[in-house]
Length: 352
Ligand code: SF4
Ligand code: SF4
Image (cartoon, rainbow, N blue to C red; front, side, top):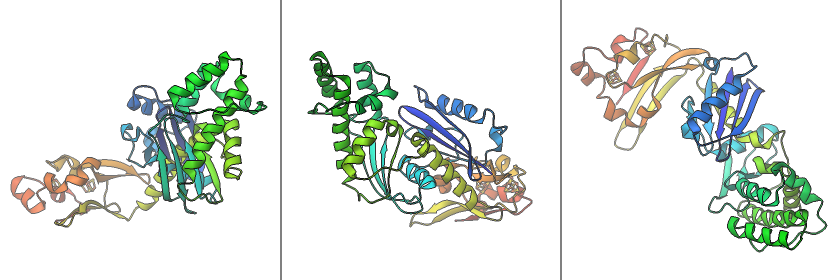
């Protein structure tokens, strides 16, 4: 079974291809201006050299701020859930996560299954995010990937009054003009970001089993400062930037496992005024596609699950079933054919 996790972040787009329990491929690239195009390019790149075709992927879950802009995803999950699930795959003992992304920062608690139990998020200010560090690296004329190691060579950081992206840049430039070393400037900034991260972590439960995820966790200088503050060595996986995409792929695997052949998939909702459900028995469904052609409301589509092509109710139709479908009885009166009439396998049920 093959699953894909696609994480469209504000700065970087990431993807992981999972074959059963093994990561067979992963990709990181800039998100760029057009997330839909990026997501398509990401998938193409992800499959290179794997011998796997896009049609062979059983289920795809998208996450990240651009998660709704992945046209081929079966569904999406929040990046908070995805990061917790992803890091749990490496370290089941993790209970506290600091996810440092391109434009926000989150503190998360999770259980032993990687399910989120609590979180707080700082997305109001760019200070301390990936974008902020990119800006500081530019000001100091140091490659982004080197600022961590440069800061570690400092003998004493310069205290920063702010990590507001605008004021910190001015303050850093001021120090630079006075001849303060780049290492001391970076050490001071990292200290300020670590303090802010620690304050965020204190708003959840700072429990042992502490991990840092997201691109910034590749910054060794910042990781060292945060470790001092929380007084714990963080668990860092092989590539912490891929945790969200891996978590999404794991969600895809779980979803696919739920939809095993023999399961009756139920689509619709119960809102207190009544229940509106269409069920498709996937064991009975032959994948003939006749319901797709027959339904005047365009409710059905075909989808690949567990290696089989089966009918499903379109994502966008699930919350609007009573508006789109008048029920089988009324549909029969209004139209010459209905989904149930064409389904030779008796796989479709309506409950109104
Ligand atoms: S008509 Fe019935 S068997 Fe054919 S795809 Fe639809 S649900 Fe499946
Ligand atoms: S009863 Fe008619 S409108 Fe409703 S899902 Fe079936 S074919 Fe579509």
